Length: 130
Image (cartoon, rainbow, N blue to C red; front, side, top):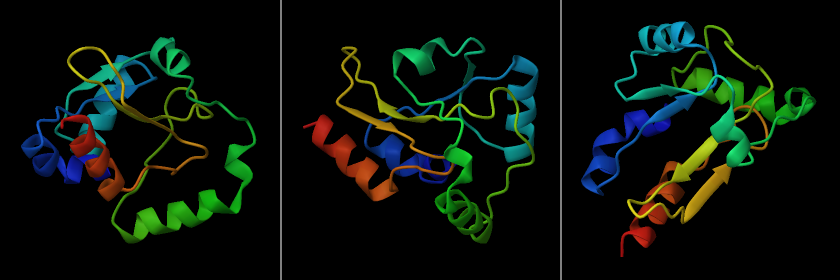
């Protein structure tokens, strides 16, 4: 969602942002309706992309204090998560995919709510497009 809020800044850098979720199409539509996100949303129900990118699925990742801290920070910034659809243990990440198919930057979440800083992500984009 942070990337969505910074969409115009990323577009100015030439980035096309998309979301890939691992639930069903029905839940993806509900996600769009609930969050009012204005980005293309793709569905990967079998988690093929998640597995190929080696995104983690740790069963105990939810039991760390960092999860509760990030959840509180997100709520302070106006983010809420109305529910979990699909595999609740599957973590995501951020991938910078270039037109030639290369991936100069991949961030794999280590626990729920773990995302790269937007400033770091913008710096990686600038580095990749030089």
